[in-house]
Amino acid sequence: MTVTITAGHLQATIAEKGAELQSLFDSHIDLEYIWQADPKHWGKHAPILFPIVGALKNDSYVYQGKTYHLPRHGFARDMDFEVIDQRDDYVLFQLESSTATKAVYPFAFCLHVSYELGGDGLVVKYKVKNSGQEDMLFSIGGHPAFKVPLEKGLTFEDYYLAFSPKKSRVKLPLKGNYIDYEQRTLGQTNTDLSLTHEMFENDALIFETKGLQSFSIRSEKSPHSVTLSYNQMPYVGFWSTYPTKSPFLCIEPWCGIADTIESNGDLKDKVGMQILAANTDFETKYSITVK
Image (cartoon, rainbow, N blue to C red):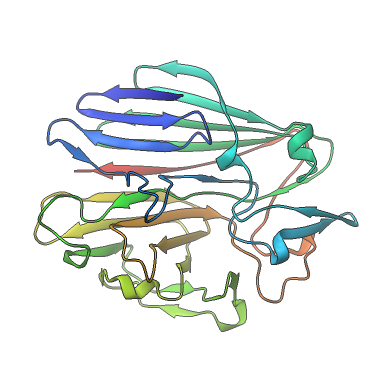
């Protein structure tokens, strides 16, 4: 099942499974911005990453002496959410902890994901409530994939990635599926970055971020672009497939990262985890602006 919301010339379609954005379409210019999940390349659109971001060593972690197993990026993307509120331009989804989730993640939670259209884009909000009586450890993030090229007649290499603010950011290299934190360096994000498929030869490009951030996919050959913006999310990832050359680019705002290669497997020691006190909420959001 899917839900469609509209505002002016923009239309967004979201699946109840995973509360996953499947389409962001501008009817005035007949332009789709979201990758349409061709399984020959990558069969997803914009999965929600919860309660972890990235991979765990051996897909497992230890909490209070017990070992649990979670796949890469967690379980939310594969679960059915409930629609609890809806207007023409807005929809709110909910996922609550259950016996099934507690078997792999021993925390009581309520996750709200909302989508709201307005002006020239879409705002995506995450709200995590700790429904339990002890601190909750979690990560959450987005994984939206955008079509590149956005329109016919152009190629992936006709586009570039623009950063705002234009300044260097700490780059976190991957070694296999894990963060090689000791080898972090300053990345050259103080200038536009021309897109090539080869830049993803070693998987995602991951950076630490602070404050207001905007990342735009643009081309000198087209007036159309897409920008993802947020405030106070500590990491961003950029990813496309390689060596398969796929016509999309993911811009991924994260509150959390994969295990580091030095990880001891204990969830309390995992780098990048959010800690939420009992009966309190965590909120964050990002926006997608199109033209």
